[in-house]
Image 1 (cartoon, rainbow over the protein chains, first blue to last red):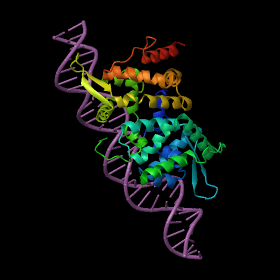
Image 2: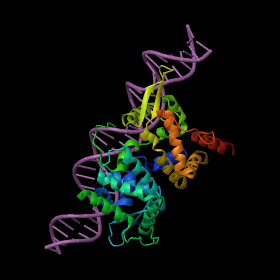
Image 3: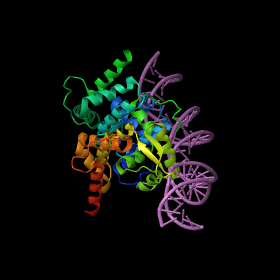
Length: 167
Length: 167
DNA sequence: GGAAACCGCTTGCGAAATGCAAGCAGTCGT
DNA sequence: ACGACTGCTTGCATTTCGCAAGCGGTTTCC
């Protein structure tokens, strides 16, 4: 996993795969973006897929090295570490949306977990922009306009998820 | 790699990763979609990254199992095998475009290989639709309207690539 | 103030995937 | 007839993955 190796090629798709062409990196970013998870144990226990702690540690190191994440210590809790998204990882939102749209159409997704992908698809670029602005505020400290309807995009996605469970 | 295993979760992004969450599957699809490669040796030698033949064989088997590709024998050459895209893999075009856009902005791409991503980004949905229609004709035998300017999308992408080389 | 829960993360080890090189049986062009 | 080419396999070394246990320290709760 050393970034000292030369790249296989300068193709954008190949380089993207060198960043998250494994089974876990993109899921970690997904949980941070859509789930709002920011701590090690949160990421370890919060994901539905169940990642082993050594692999989580290795991926987090990898993503920090690539400047897809930053890490700092929690001011209010000496042994906690806070992981933050960077602008690069925030801009994965459209990629996630495209992947979600494709997966929802062609793979055996479950309805509860696909609802986010559907809303993201329906919301289009405008919703993505709003979501990314919220992430910038949360992770980079860049103030964002308050949500027009009083609900953050993430809250709305989560609400929709809960609604499918009781349906 | 057996598909007999249960899925880790029904999340669209997770399921997508189970399809091409490795270092090669998406590159093979890239070379078929953008490079027009359809034979084993073509794929082995044509990709800039250099895949080993045993891994190529394993990935092709995997993709065929998942119905991302189909294979048949070449009518005009008894020992040749032709691999074709399916509708599912053709619809990866928007995903590739999103990935290319992101990679071009955040990763150290080389200009010659990024030109396709740029044209795809600038062309937008309309260009993607035209490209997918051409792929359907080529791989699924579904007739497509002739290109308005007499040039296929792939030809235009390739032309632009050549132009960056001599610049 | 003591015990239990929790913090990020490491270690040890078996299992699986990856990657390189060589090669195989059959087919094709010349 | 001969050499180049076809898709693909085999053998083997290296790397990565993944489970389970646990470590030194911090925080929480009673």
